[in-house]
Length: 491
Image (cartoon, rainbow, N blue to C red; front, side, top):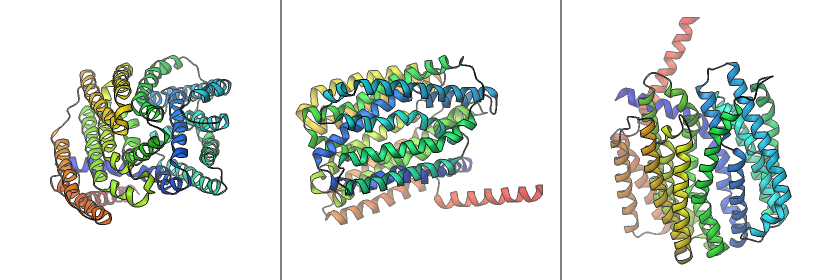
């Protein structure tokens, strides 16, 4: 048990290096929501959401699965070899080529795209929201390399600087009366500056001369990921698109706010994911790699369930305390969306076998789930609105999790331990179901949610599902003492 606790503490310690950067980067935009919702009407916010959906689709295509290919090919290559530099060079060159082709395509077809979007959007707004998406591949590759090379401080500094700069620009431009354009202009400028800052580092990682022979393998690996993510968009983006078309922009705005607060779960899980996703292929090659991969993936799954239930106990009340009355319905739907994201997180972590040799199987899973989602949206959204969207998402993500787990275990059987996640799930459901039966004012209900959250965490620590913070700090102090002692002996 001691080894398990130390292992979990080590993971949390390494993931913690990324926590500050990610929380600051994404947290700043979340903290801006109360301010932005007071500057934009539900109709304007819904229009902004349509633009963001289009940017998401563009980012998926522009990315072309190159970051995942980088993780896989560089992770399995010999460290510090010429092959590694060549792979990095190929991935970046392909990202640049795809970005240039997409830039020309979107510029030529901008007016046609504007005509089919389910909101009143100008051509200039479309180009502004597309520009950061075109740069995403050029940003993601050097940032991924920093994670692979454990350059956490540089990674965090760049992301925090971008987030703060962008937030300041949004505030200034909104005060000047730019409306939706304020957010679009700030995003475009911040992304451009980040690319400029990343280029010197990226150039150092690239080979001076390289061949293109690996490019076909990279594209062959990345293409199914793009197709799979487009299927994922059909699950998580088409719902908002159809809501705008069938129910109205105002309802979309309420749903979009709930989505953003539910995505805090993804934000909180990102430090773990940033450490785990590049490292899992490296770990798999090591002795007892399968056992450790299973334990780390299950730890991340349990952590996602824990954070999701903690948010269910506190976030709905918090949203009603800080948001304008026009957006209060979002506090009701956020619980369902948090459940969706908990299942999604589990599917993202328990799928290593779907990526270790080829990415084809995950593509078929994503597309099958996408078809189920589209059928559900078309049949139900017009009659049941935002609740239909949330219900369809939950069912589809459960199917996705089961299929990912099945195919992953078929290709790469891992010794998962299921006792702990069942404990986290059952206890969390009990606490969440208990809260609505207590009739209190909004503020006191929020306080009760915080208290129940503390009790829930304490029980799970006592049951040793998660490491004790006290024991974790003690182990960390002991590791530091041993490290200092080793240095002293060496000297």
